[in-house]
Image 1 (cartoon, rainbow, N blue to C red):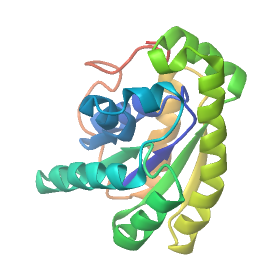
Image 2: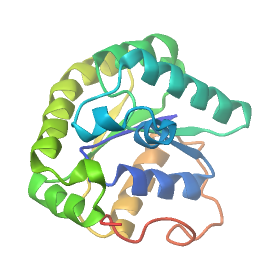
Image 3: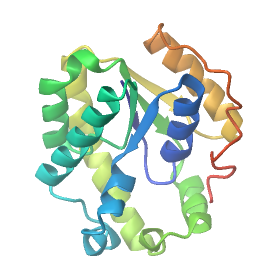
Length: 197
């Protein structure tokens, strides 16, 4: 299991999908899972986070389903805060190969989010609030993972989709030597061609 962290617009979804296709794994996006429930639109559009208990239950269910179907998992944006990280550290540490942080300058993120055009990306104040929450939480999350000897790797998220994917593939192979690339076209299929899509 790989955890993928990054600010909104950093490319977690795009790169998580690329890695999943590369290795034959499954990406579990907490943001997508939450949006698909349709229950939390007001909270999301306000730039706030969903109650931890709801997120933990939702992701537990998705992780178990993927594992039951024989898939290794890439977690996109989960855990999001200290409570979720404590749960992960206590219940899943032995399954986690490592955590990767996609690093992209904020000015680049604003450009990508403007192109993406989702409702929760339109208000700069809402986006800034999400950035602030992420930055506060990541500093409490990382020590919990480190305490369980989970490796944490920072990866430059600037460049073409392919350049960033190739960086990540190398890191994943280092974290999980058993990871085997599939005979897929990493840049084909349904994988996004632009971070702005």
